[in-house]
Length: 302
Image (cartoon, rainbow, N blue to C red; front, side, top):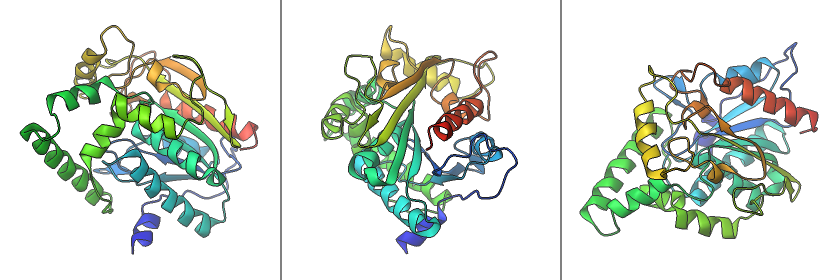
């Protein structure tokens, strides 16, 4: 039953396109972040990005991992889906692209099951943790009524989001908070260091265990007056002091493997072309950036 649900959570795009610009050798799998889903109220999490990749001939799937849980639990969810997908399609490896907590999730898979992975690309991922998660943990310490309320509320929200997506993965917001905190990220990186920058705010090895590692991120919390989510991003940015950030993740924290670019004019939600494609007037188009990256992977034989 669980495998059926996992298979149903994958959105398959297959057909022959005249345009082969994004037609990678291995399928692309997009992985959402914390409290994410494949879609919410009919709106794709990776808004406009799927169509852009598919229009160039890419075979694209969208994974549905648990909305709120530890990186390892989310990673095991993804492994189960990739194994199912491999059996259904015959694909031997996948190009994984993860946003936010999805970035750490795809790293977990590449670390423990490199046989399934051709490349890992993280977008706005808090590889060294997020000050926002640290602030929440401080305001709601373990054992406190605040922590109990927060856990109940976020777990319920995560379960609701999963229900809308037709999934029933288990929720554990406390574990998610731990994974996204500075300390939790450090512990995770010690266990799964593949692609880790060799110097502070630098780059890491581009290839480890046959897997290519890439990262990118944004540094503009407020980008569009009409975007209702910008207020949340601006509020989150207050926890970073003078450090450049996207509203939830610091510029240097987004670095992993080969850094493609860390200063796009995007906030954390612009990185997935939300809300409904609203972004800064002169900022790069997220769908176009993903399209160019798919072409990069194609040209590398991936």
